[in-house]
Image (cartoon, rainbow, N blue to C red; front, top):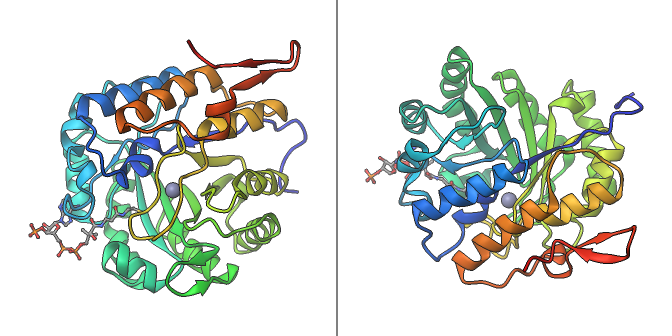
Length: 314
Ligand code: COA
Ligand code: ZN
């Protein structure tokens, strides 16, 4: 079966510093990004996607990636993957002392064309040498399949289409496939179907991750469906910031604080402190000059012993 009884450990993959910030117009200073990443690590997050080595023209907010990585204190047991679109990005990542990368394509040509100026097939050809080199260097490698449930340009995506792309990425040597619901249209039964179809194609649940956007309020329900199907890695962004600049109307990522509350209350173990995440979420919201609008960001957590709200801060 998909998961062992007693297997109650979930990995939260934090995307706030990368996916969260990439679509924000307010420029954030490098030192504030560093502080945000430190607060996330303090909260117990062990996978923190730090930035992108992409064209600074495509994503101006992350143009300081080289500087950021040079100044980032590495912590034992914490992985700081960076997004890499091509060999140029790989060279920058190598110079920055990175040891974990994520490449990113999608289920549809229309989306990849807008996002990285390539068809899906072209993107796979571009990633092949990048992933091979990263493998030689012993780096951890993840691949995103965006628009896994629907595309802002072409509509519905058949799960088999997303699985076909994922299978080809696995063949290029990645350790983890992350299916992204870029525009937040997926629902739980589709998640279960995708997980099972991927497993049938030889992509074990331990190699699958999911990246949900809460655009239509289905993100946590989708996490529950992923958990039921045996998936144990989920992406989220502290403060719920983010989205893709090439997916018009895409709302924020699933918020880490909402995910942590849900997992805690459901008895899943993950090693992340809700108070710690709320501290990071409040910090970045203040730097962005925005109120914290996530559910748990507003309501706080809840102590079942006393019935009192927790994590409200001072
Ligand atoms: N790092 C820094 N600069 C890069 C780069 C990299 N990894 N790759 C390309 N560039 C530069 C080129 O030098 C060129 O600069 P110039 O115009 O000053 O000469 C410019 O970017 C365009 O490069 P080109 O090779 O012609 O590619 P392109 O214009 O087709 O862009 C990508 C392709 C992939 C580089 C670009 O679309 C990109 O960075 N996209 C990232 C999108 C993203 O991060 N989306 C969010 C994730 S969901
Ligand atoms: Zn996202």
